[in-house]
Amino acid sequence: MKKKGISQDYWGYIFLIPFFLVYFVFSMWPLIQTFIFAFKEYYVDTGSISIFSKGDRIVDNGFCALGNFKAVMGSDGEFFRTLKNTVVVWLLGFIPQIILSLLLAVWFTDLRLKIKAQGFFKTVIYLPNVIMASAISLLFFLLFTKGGALYQIMQTKEGESLLTTVWGMRGIIGFINFIMWYGNTTILLMAAIMGIDPSLYESSQIDGANPTQTFWKITIPHIKPILSFVLITSMIGGLQTYDVPALLAGDFGNPKGSVKTLVMVIQTGKDSNIGQTAAVSVLIFIISAVLGFIAFNTMNERPVKKKKKNQKLVSAYPTAKKQQSSSRPAKG
Image (cartoon, rainbow, N blue to C red; front, side, top):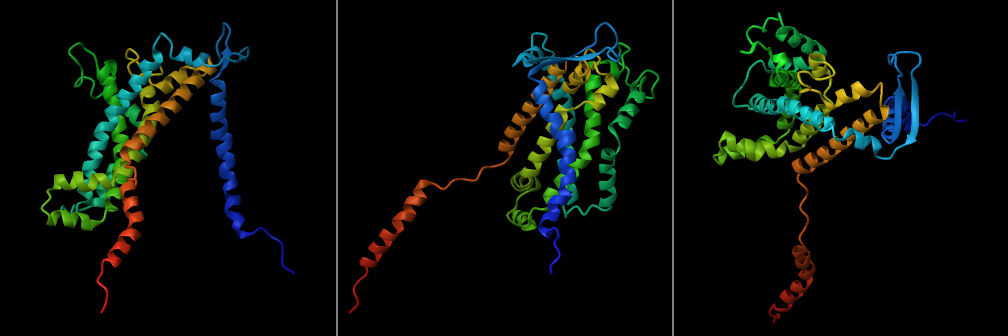
């Protein structure tokens, strides 16, 4: 008699059960709750004491339609200011990151240059990505704060340091994001370039194309999928920027709130008006989805549809063949 047991076809699904359980409990369910709270008047009643007092209670006044979204995007304009700050800080890090990563990826994959010790250079480039953002932020804070090693060198004429000026603080945050992520982007772009057929580069050299023409006509078109991936993931991560600005400037994004990001709004309001902070989270989700969709469709070419003219020629082919056979001279 055959022993009854679980078919081997189902073992893969069984091993996936822990992942789906953890994902649903810690990711999917909080996401669903966020969307629910965004449409409810839901907040913490702190009374006149601290929010950590035992007297705090959750107040749920029920469904409020788009009330939270109207309040968040209201007349004070904080949402749009923080959105602008978030985009500016992201661009300050992403633009030099993608330029330098493209240059390094092309140099390291160019067989004509014959760069030695590539493994060492790749390790050095990727190393900052391994270090925690909090450690790098603390390092820069100690360097540029009053009494730091670079405080006197980078001090302005008005006696201010980079940490107390708007563009100084934005520049430091952008530079930290650039240092942390350009190595990861370089590795991805190198993998994409190494996947291009070498015969294309050989043909371009035979035809007399210079390196600039080869870069724009062969390299860039063939790595567009990876470029779109880098752009979309970087953009989503940029909209969720929190750790570096918060450690350097605090949750209020000083100086003058110039580096207060969207996630800082969530962090400062999560212990009071939960409904409005959930609305901010939903807006970040919508903005990320829309920008990601636009970037994906812009970077990736759609397949060209067959023209109706070709279909008519194909359908007319049998008739043309009959006419051709009838026009042949008869034998004998």
